[in-house]
Image (tube, rainbow, N blue to C red):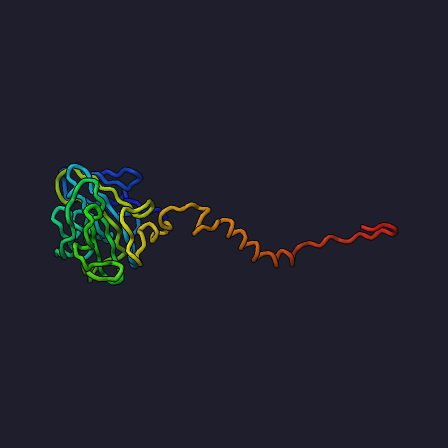
Length: 244
């Protein structure tokens, strides 16, 4: 299943492009947000988004339930987001902590969420910063995550939002193409978790083995006994004085 931003689940002042992976906000009516097409109720998920436009610090991202208002992301237990402008992770109308080192146009940022344990991490990749701006935070070990305990109304959908007036452009990468950063151990890209199978790979190659050839050989081996059992036998024709 392909996962993109949802043109049917967005405020009117956001324009989608690039296969519904880029959101452009140019209006003065804010906040504004757009949810993804697929939501999740369990799992350890990872995605990235890019800051861009004249006001890159206005490009925020997180997760929101279908019941969360698109003009109120981060303001209830139905959503959590990283507010880039104020360097805050906000959940249930509470600031959980800071996460950002800087915000420059073109920078990529990462989000990792453990829904089952209600923990979330953010990281700016362009600055070489740490998860949640902490030297000890690590999604792979479950340490240093901001708690979103009490999150409600699952499933939660990845989202992009804009909380200030200004021209901003944000592109999301759910994992259909190569990431700028590295997925933490134990986590899965949103694309793969949605059934997309992770980043595209050569359909004929899997760990150096011809996938199609391996499948065909395995199938032949399994079906050979059945084929032999039901293989029609050619009747033997006997004519006196002749051998066939």
